Image (tube, rainbow, N blue to C red; front, side):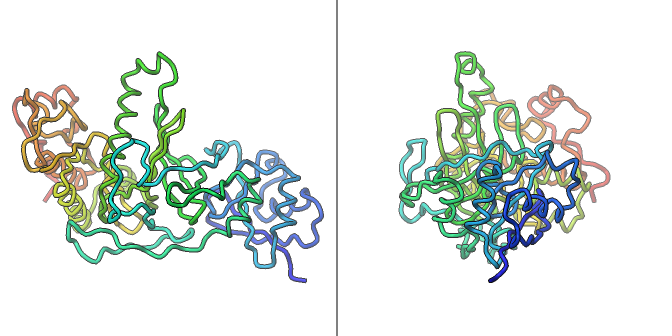
Length: 418
C-alpha cells in the first residue's frame, strides 16, 4: 500500500516538508512528526495552530482541532502528498479567523451601476501568479490602449467536493458562477484606521488576490466621522473607475462586495511592493531603472487619459512594482472621470497629496484642471525615484501650498540629478 503523506509548510510558505503519517493512528503522533520536521521546539508548540491550505501562504478555514485534523488526514491523505497544511505561530500571525464568503463579479457590482457590456467580460483576469510560483508578464507592446491578454489558469485546487468536505460545507457549491465566486480571506498585508488589505484565495480557481476592506458606519458617531465617510466614498470611487479599465500598467479590478459591516474591493495580487517602499529600502534608482519604470507609468497614464480618467494622486506610493519590475498604477480613490481628460474640468478642491500636487489644483478658485495635473505629479515622481526623497523635502505642507499655489513654484531639483 502506498504511503500516505501530508505536506506541511512554514508560515512564510517558502519551505515545504513531506511528513509520512502511514503508521500514525492519532492526531498527537501526527503533530509530533510535523513539529519535528519544522524544528519547532517543544516549549513553543502550544503556541502553534494548524490550518488547511491549498496555496501555501493562505490558510483556509479556522484552526483545526485534533479530531477534525485527524479525520482530514485519514480521509484525504494520499501517497503523492496532495494534502497540505500550514502551521502558524499565534503569537505572530496577523490572520484573524478566516471566513468564507462570496463576492459579486463585474456584471453584478454592488454599486448598482450600469452593467458592463459583454465585450468587457465578467470573469476574473489571471494574475501574475501560477499556483504559488510567480510568472513574468511581458506585454507585447507599449500601445497605451493595449488590453491584457488572457493567461491560462493553473490547476491549484482539488475538486470542489474535497473542499466542501474539509470545510464542513461552508462553500456554497450551488452558486451560479456567472454571478459570484467563492473566496477565502488570508493573511493581513497592511492596515490603517479604517481599512485593511488581505491576501485572498479564489476557491474556484486557486487564484491569489488582494482584498481591500473598509468598515461601514455602524453608529451615529461613525456616521458623523467625516474621515470614515471619505474612506468609504474613496473605495466606491476606486471601484467605479477601475471596473472600466484594462491595461498592463493599471492594477486589475476583479470584483466588489458589500456586507452589513464592510465594503470590499478585489484586485489582482502583485508579488512585490509599492515604489515608495522600495525607495525607502534600497535608496535612489539607477538612471536606466528610472527610464524603465517611467516608460511604464507613461503608458499607463496615456491609457487613463484616453479613457477619460485623471488619476489626481500619482506618486511613488501609488505605483506597484512586481518582483520582475512590472509596474501597475493603483490608488484611484480620488480620481476623476470625464469624457475628455484633456479638457478643463471643475474638480473638487485639494484632491491628492500636497507635495505632488499641481498648481491648478491649489490656487484656482474655480478649481479647473485637466490631465496635465498628472504630468506634474509624474515629474515629481521621477525626481523622487532619482533621489529617494519626496518633493519639497524639508518644507511643511502649508509652505508648499503657498509656494505652489500662489508663487507657482516647482519643486527644487537636487544637484545630484544629472
